[in-house]
Structures are given as structure tokens and as C-alpha cells.
Length: 616
View 1: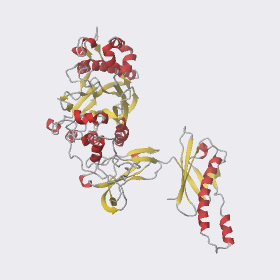
View 2 (view 1 turned 90 degrees about the vertical axis):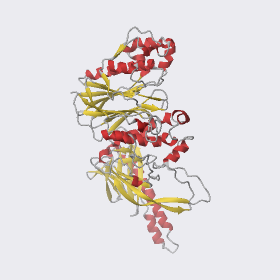
View 3 (view 1 turned 180 degrees about the horizontal axis):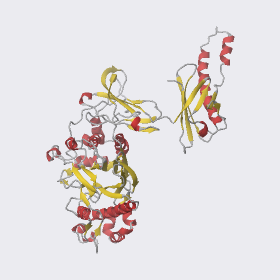
View 4 (view 1 turned 45 degrees about the horizontal axis):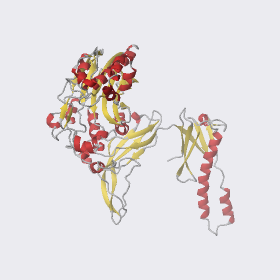
């Protein structure tokens, strides 16, 4: 690779990073890095860079000098000593040397040229770069694989990605070490101990267990075959027991950066075969046309609740432990969400780590932006809303913690005072960590049309209908306030409210959502007993005209001991119209492995999917 100098400098940051690749005495290039203050004078920076280069050059020449034998003449030794001098450095622009008193932030700019000895190197200013690239921990045939990229000065659309598979060859080695385990083996081991990652991340190879007196089998790949140039790759059954390689060449509108590659040691494994959700995906093969959009609401079952002794032994004893492990489940729900080709996705029970490592990078590859909102307190899971960037642009976020909104919203003063006056109910309501994620999006298809996307997960307890009523009333009061904010700006605002409402259709939450009112004497107010019943004089109303966009399926949650509809996509029919609904999976598929989750269903809930269009 030829000599070159790259500069990373961002306005507003304190420091500038300069990287010089330069060959010494015609030998292989070395890399010299300096990190200096932007407000430092150029002369000090050049002096440091000059010292680094000269140091390396001097060491190289001293090594040569040691090879001079006793038979060498004194003249030869003297000639070598005189060669040790400073390497000349200078920075130029338009063939004029830049004064050393000029600040780094003004000197190291595009168009500047670094002269080192007799070589002139144009500055490569803020080149596109892959700062890190990782792959998921396990690979299964038939399930998508995608990189987690940390990019800088890069246009993702312009990046070139190449996926390769290679047949594994086995050779004996005298080196001691441990053999690699499959993802499901690791998952079973991790069920009783700390989660162990399968080896798939660059720089995160498994720690080797020292074993004496054994010979390991070393697996290598002699030939790589390119199989895809897409950003997301789904291996075939023919790729089982093969290894994977990915290269990424970063680009922007003017430059191409250095290629980065990754070769995980984990092999591609067999998957569970065709999953029932793939039948549903027959209805969502195509993207929605202009003026309409597809909505998905899905409680994906947080790892926090799935991978524990209680979940394995009590909640989901019918599900194999490996199928409860997040490394297995996330491959299923990622594939499921991909095949719905949705424009709006509202997820509940999303672990923050899963969001950062999987949901956000995956949907970024598909052209969707993802936003996460954790529950209040120390709960490490929450809501995620994703939207297709070719369909919508983000106008604002208006997330709330429900207890705080109940205290502070003037429209809720009466309800707050009634709850606060009830000692039994106060603790039950104000100890909740429930949040409402609110994302306001403007349509790029229909100018002036705005969609207010709400996403929540209401309190779960089966005998808490009255608490959920308080929560949903709080939600709708806040959403009315958000809508007013944008209608005052001349926007046409429609509401889409998704979530796990933990309420079956006959109860008060659904009645309030779809009729716009709940009476003061509704039976749900009394489910907590006389001590928790509020003394209400009037009922509550909201101004939206809502319907359940996916209707009322027999169930959206199916576990041992319960099945029923808890999940909804409520649609504001004043501005929106439901076009079609993706039917639920057949009951024989749901019960094939007793209940949910299972080896082919990653969650105990079923995604709700419908297509919606603007009435305008």
C-alpha cells in the first residue's frame, strides 16, 4: 500500500488525529499516529510527527550498523553515522508552505499536502471508516445474518459488502485448547450459569481451557466462495457446517475507505426448519404502496423474563431450555420481523442489549430507524418503535412515565387526587414502571399527514383492570395534548396506538379505547375490592375515534394455562382506514409444541399486523 496521510478532525471536538503510513528506507510501510489539540500550533505537531518518524528510522539504521563486521573500514562506519539526521517534514497548500504558527485546525485541511523528505502526500481528510464490525453469536441456516457496524463519515447505502462461505477442513494440531460448542450447547450450559457467548465477534474469541496431553482438531478454510453482496445474508441449508466471512468497504459520495473483514470461527448450523410465521409472511411479500403503511405490534418476550429458573420450570416448562435462550430466539424474531416488510413496528419487552446489538443494527440495514424507551426505575427492558425512513420523517418524541404524567397533567388532577386519597390503590398505581413511548412522524408520501405512534405495555396483573384503566386514561390525555401541539402547526394528525394492553376485549380498556368513554360506575373500577374502589362522580372521555385494526382474534397470547387477546393495534379512523389484516397462525401450529414460546415461536405473544391507508 502506498504512503499516505489521513486526518480525522471534527468541528467542536478538542483533538485532531493524524495517521501517516510511510515506508522507511524503501521497506514495508509503518504507521505513525499523533493525537494533538486542534488549537495547538502546527509546528509542535510537526515536531512530534518528525520525532516519531526519525526514531523509527534511527532504530532501523542502528540494526543495520550492528551487522557491520570488524573487517569493515572506519570510513564505512563513519558514513553510516552521518546518515542519522532528522527526516524533513513540511505542510503545504497551493505549493506554499504553511506557517508553523498556524493552528492545527486550520492547517490540516482538505487540499493540504504533507511533504516528507522528497515525497508529497495529499491530505486525506475525514475518510470513510469502519470503526468496528461484529456479527451475531450464532448462525443458523435459513435465518438472516447482519453486521453490527460502527461507521464514521460513511454513507451506508454506498458501502460494499461481500459475504463468503467456506468449506471447513480439519487438521490435527499439537496445540492444546478447547473445541467450539454450538449455539444450542452454549445455551443449555448458560441456563444454569452466566450466559456464554458463541464465538462470533471480532476480538471476542472464547477463552481456551487448558487441557494437557490432547491433540486438537484445527479447522481451516482453504477456499472462500462469494455468495451475496446484500447487507443482510441468509445462509442456505447447503451452507451448514461452513464458515462465514464478511468484507465491508466503506464509502461516501467522494471517497472510499479501507476494506475491513471478519472471519468468525463459529460454523453455520442447521435451523429449526420452516416456522409457522412464514405462512403469515405470504401476505406481506411486497412493500406497501404510496399512501399506505404496514404496522406491526409485537411483544417479543424479554430475555429478562425468559431465561431464568422460574421461566424454565414454571412459566414455560414445555419449551426446551435452548429455545428460551436469547441467542436462539432473537434469530427467529428477527427473521419474522424482516418478512413482514413493515413500515411501522412497535415492540414491547425489548432488552436494552438486544436493542443495541440486534434490533437497531438489523433494521438500519433494512432502512428503518429504531428508537428505544426503557421502563422507569431499574427495569432493563422497554419499548421500541421503528419506522421506514423512505416513508416517514421524525418530527418529535414525547415519551412519558405514566405515574409522572398522572401527577403533572392538569387534565388529570381529579383522577390523581382520587388515587392519592386511596391508600391501598396509591402504592399499586405509583409503584408501576409503565411508560408510554410516543413518536410523531410525518408522511413522505402524503404531505401534511402526521402519524402519532404510541407504544405501551400496561400492568400485567390479572386482577388489576382498575389500574389499567387509570393507565390508559393517562395515556390518552397525554396523546390528546401531543395531537393538539401538532394540529396547531397546521398538521393533520392521526393516532396509531400499539401495545400489549394486558386486557381482553370485553373489559374496560378496550371499551374506553373504542367508544371514547368509560363510565364512573363501570365494573372494572371495583375489581380491586371495596378498599381500592375510587369514589368517582364522572366518567372519562377522549376525543379520538379508534378501532382495533386487527379486529379481535381468539388469542394473541398462548401459554400453559391461558390464551386470550392482549395485544392491539388501535387505529384512528378519522384519518386512517385499515386495508387488510394478516391472519393469526393456525391453532394446530401454535399447539404443536404445547404452547408458546417453542422451538418455532420465539415469544409467548403473536405479532399483530395490518395495512393502513390515509383517508385523504
